[in-house]
Image (cartoon, rainbow, N blue to C red; front, side):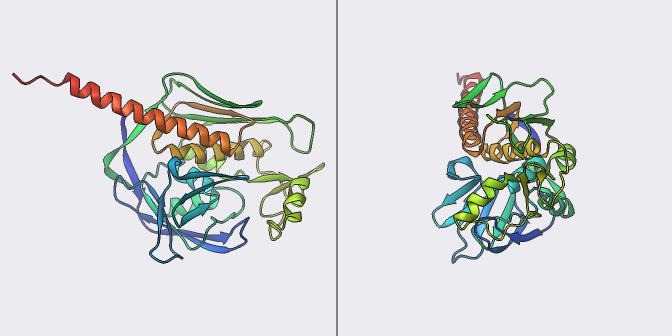
Length: 300
């Protein structure tokens, strides 16, 4: 891990409002500028004493179809779309306040966050952003699914997803990958939306979950394609999985330089990779500090 670009924060306050997929609660998300080395700090503005939790893999917990964070009373659900937007826009320090448990579903994508952040502007800060450069292949597996991190020569990270199913269904097998820059993410990835099959949606409704979510709030597929909706990209599902991958790996807490590809993976496998990358970053940083100490002239 070495030092690369300077850290960034937003220049002004911005916000988004919407309703959670799972809780059905209306919430307001307020994003505020933060000093260097703050990181992304999530704050529950609706609770006494405003408890907070760093957006870091150390505080991650598994959940169905989403990524959650918690530290004590500071609990946050479905944070991946926000984290993808912050990471891809190179925003390192930000205080994110929310007056509820779950971040809003919005249109199922990161685009509303991108629009708000672009309106807020960017400031360059004096401190440098630590980064982890992948120097050898790392592969994690769960059954037939896998995720890999490998070196890349360009210096610009690549994120990709390979979507495949055991049996033919309403969603076609598809792939997507992109070089993660603010422009490419904003144009080609941020608008890709959450998706489910009609049978999955019906199963959730049967459990009393997400009954308020309409066909316009995300992509719901039957045998003929999206119901009462249209695709924004012909491989929108793979693009959204790539969006989730960016958001989940952002919890490693460093700028990542490498090629990151998932095959049929999900939030749990992404979380395992984020943890592995964080641990590698800590080990690499400790080794570099030791080498720097060893290289100093010895006292006479």
